[in-house]
Length: 180
Image 1 (cartoon, rainbow, N blue to C red):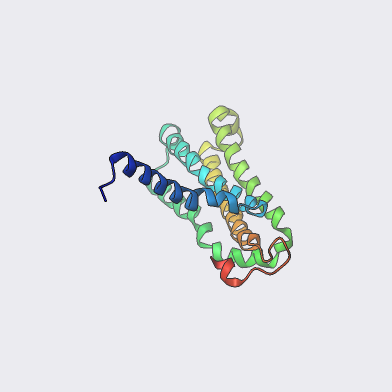
Image 2 (cartoon, rainbow, N blue to C red; image 1 turned 90 degrees about the vertical axis):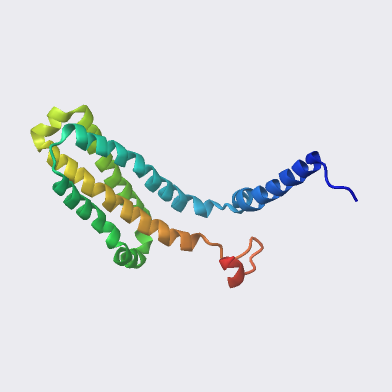
């Protein structure tokens, strides 16, 4: 038996990579269910929040006269909702029938935070006539994480609900299959 040629080795490697890609990536698409979409959209929105954080950093640097100590304290208060995620999860379980309202509440807080930032960039003088620019920024910085935490807690609970408990033919899915 002779050694494989370079072309045969490449073909075998391509087949191996394709099988891995099919098993690990494309199979995710085949397993996709409509019930997975709402929590996935919430998680995607949370990921996009990183972009607004970058914009906020440049805004603070260019337009606000806030000290590093103040920004560190603001970071603490903005991070506090994430520390309260577990008790909020229990609260969401208690008021589960209003989960869609909680998603809208979280989205509304996030949207309000983003609108404040847009207003500060586009209509700074008009907003400064109502409150100081720094106060608007602090309000925006505190509203956003509260909205994201509310949505994240509800999305976490929805992922548990999204796992099918019965097969399409009506037979129950075994616990082993649900955990696989």
